Amino acid sequence: MTTQRRFRLRCAAFLALLPLLALPTPLAPAAAQEAAPATAPQTTAPAATATAASLAPWGERGPLAVESRLEEWHDAKRDRAVPVKLWFPKLDAVQGALPIVLFSHGLGGTRETYAYFGEHVASHGYVSVHLQHVGSDDSAWRGQARPMRAMERAASDLDNIVGRPADVTFAIDELTRLAADPQWPLHGRLDLARIAIAGHSFGAFTALASAGRKFVLPLGRERPLGDARVKACVAMSAPATDREKTNGSYDDVVIPCLHLTGTLDTSPIGDTTAEQRRIPYDASPNCERWLLILKDADHGAFGDSVLGDRRRDPAHHPLILAVSTAFLDATLRDDAKARAWLTDGGFAEALGARGTFEHAAATERAR
Image: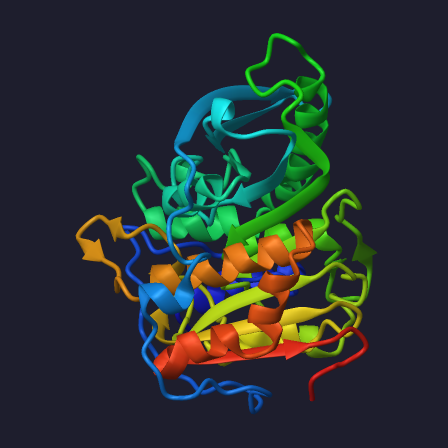
């Protein structure tokens, strides 16, 4: 019996959520395994090459200069630190309140990771708030004699599983409090009625949980973790198991969701295969959703461009940013042009042979 098999048996109580894993680190390179989508896509992009012009304006850096700031938040109710990094446009260049994107890092990450995403959406007029989840951040592997084993423990720890969406709820509470404080730099500049959640891997679980995904234990007990103030969700490389095809985990997700994965998107730790990454999309009948499957993208494609000695494929980030930004504009800003680009074939044409793109309306459960 392998070490990983023994670990899974000891953590059987959490099988419904394993593996909740993040970006590969220099300690944990991802294994690549090509897999076809589990079901035939509804919309397959025509053969074309994505160019800067074809992804404009959403794939290009926005017109706004960007600033960032680090803050140390503390949830007194849970006696828990929640460090954050905020990316936002220079406030003297924009008018009115700005929509918000909360970003949840993957296992082993920090508030400093996924800067490419935060800076990009901020240049398009969003405030991107990157949360650091203590316990499943870089403390899960730094200084550990057996870092992979420590990461496995962090991924299956119930406090981390339920603590992450609780961090999201606290962050919305804290943003609401700070927005009313005249001494805070972003005082009066947040549109608290337009909040999206985004995340990668363990962060994608966090995002979907905040969007309404239920925590379903093997015996069928449920624990809702959602926050009704979240209005849209971007889930990159969401972990999934075959049980979730039928156990109703996603039945309470009613807000629009964008799912992103790749044909090589297996887990660096755990058992989620590339084809299982589409399960959250297929098993969410009560929300409008989109699914991007990038050709030859592995689990780390949605992370930062450079990680240790590994440099990402430069073709993937423009596509990730374009579809995510258009989705945010369509859902949080009711931008008809962005919605049409997503639903009427504009993005699929720009995507070309680099992947497939699907769309489903609410009440449609893929088979």
